Length: 251
Picture 1 (cartoon, helix red, strand yellow):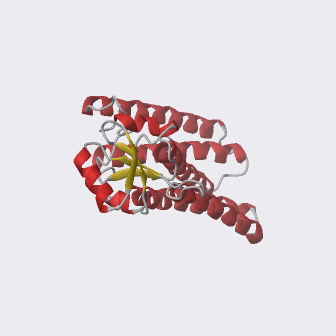
Picture 2 (cartoon, helix red, strand yellow; picture 1 turned 30 degrees about the vertical axis):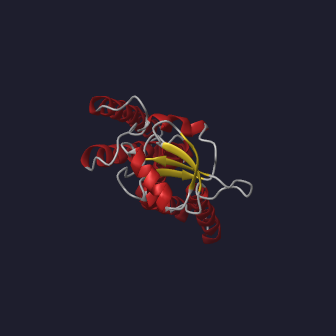
Picture 3 (cartoon, helix red, strand yellow; picture 1 turned 135 degrees about the vertical axis):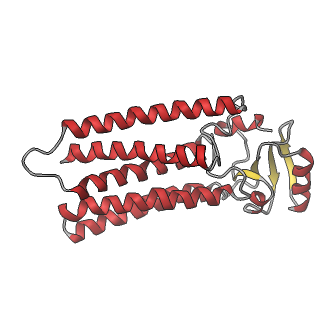
């Protein structure tokens, strides 16, 4: 039963990737896989990398189907709710991994790039297609296998995991106690004049900027307001290093 559930979750993980790629990359065209990566700035190259991504999801799906076939029911039949629950768990895990890794750590894309508040869309998508399917799928799996008290503990654990993932995004707006500066990464195509107007309007003091003013460090009393002024990412970290380095070539 355990292997059956694991391979069902693998299949669900692939379905989550297909759902993301087909809906967001192709139908809605809100972003591509590498929308915010410098050097991948033509539609042809963006679509090419989307194709590589879908090919990878095909391999994951094939692995999941192969595992389910190899571990098919012998004797006791697996209930359909077990497979549905496992698929929902994998589907939710995909969106949680995508949000934490692709949106916030690597920053290769966001859910809705042209939104004045991309973080809000990240959180909405994470809750609707990540945390919710994961909780429902886990509940289906545990309903038959454990008593209500144990299931309650599982629900609480999942809730904590969802809050932690959500908190990672919110934490980017909160500087550490000793840090008074804020790093702001602007959307592609934002003009330096627009950035300067935003600095003046928010009563902020410019501390550092890259040559194109696509990444700036400011002494600013505002955090959320920067998203309304065209920012893709706002962080309490003063140094635009690590995963921010790619942002220097956005504009």
